[in-house]
Length: 212
Image (cartoon, rainbow, N blue to C red):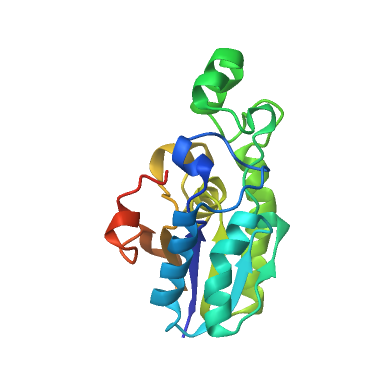
């Protein structure tokens, strides 16, 4: 038996609906976001879970809690799984950022691996704090199913790191809707992507919400 990681992006927040930048801000889930978390628990509680690792933000904790309650596992909070820090862009829309931080915005769109949002983090910096969490999971759990509940940017950056994709392309190559599940199996030849951005478990009305 090998180790399989399930990466779950948190459920819907007001920012995931509006497209505003939300990294270190700490909103709760919307009512629909809580329904997404309950739907995930209802579908995935039948899996034999080994451990559950969670970013210490309200939206990720609320997303993990229904499954933790259902299977009787305690979530393990890890700061390294927090979302990319957007600095002065926190809470702002892309339109605002483009109007007020145009040079930084263009650099970030072009090469986010090394160019941060104004006063924020680069993708390389996120990878440097998030990948050690995954390495620690690998060392502690050689086999079984482990859930990692994190954020849009952080999960995309982690997947790029695991799959050998240029970190500067994380925004261009990988989509990650709210409450989506991505599955990576660690096998003989290393990490194997088995599922990406899956929301098939959600009821139709929730799956139709953009949740980007």
